[in-house]
Length: 365
Ligand code: BDR
Ligand code: CA
Image (cartoon, rainbow, N blue to C red; front, top):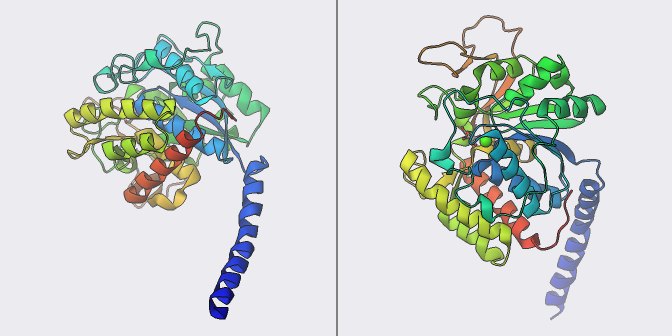
């Protein structure tokens, strides 16, 4: 009896002591000091939507703040990506976040858009079921103006995350040379180095859409972080995982949409033969958030001089690393070439479960 009491007392004491660092940590992350301030440049797109949902979870957990969103045509036309971003924000309780429209609305993705993968609306046919958009495309600021203003107002504070073609970032750099160097970091999902392309054999979609803009962005600073297909082709959310997210809170609208998006994407990913026959879909755009919040999942990071092929007849949009052993004073990027996919998938799903379990309690930034 005495022995059991001692064990109980000891374990109570240990959990009491352990609770201190946890309490301190929680208050640090919610004080605002440790929050990453993020500007997302995006072309939603179902995997963009998943990345944004995940970011909402991280915001609600006190780790980040969504500063603003800039949209660009890519997966679908600019007007649709703008509306999709607005509806996704409304669903998550973030309707107050500013959304900018494409810097160049006449711009067309070089290889055409991705309706074949993401559906005509870019969101697997369910865009119109999402809450109404509260942003107005015609009245919205242009992305390049917003990026220039935000980075000038808070140099070194805003992390720019791009998960679409790089047209907006390049337009900002052209409008105000040196502006991207004022971001805290620039983190990009794009490119394919050792892994095959998904637009052509050698080119990844975001870079292939607008190769000249991509080259402008890679030249804009010397520490751009690139998450290419080499890393992102391993980030899969399976049908079972989507079900488990829904089971966490079946009445959550976000969980219901995650399930709908997943069901659509499972079929389109199988037909595009990109998931090794597994019933799941590739959440390429989530890769950037692993770099920012779970860097332990990144396995092979190369310091490199990256260039984009802007003219090749068969290789336009290819991203290239300088490999020869000559000095490289022009090294401009950190390229992630491999990842811990098992833990990535588990982390993403758990954070999405956290989001849906909070769904109903509108908290925003
Ligand atoms: C990238 O291309 C787009 O279709 C996805 O949204 C992602 O940003 C993957 O190559
Ligand atoms: Ca995208």
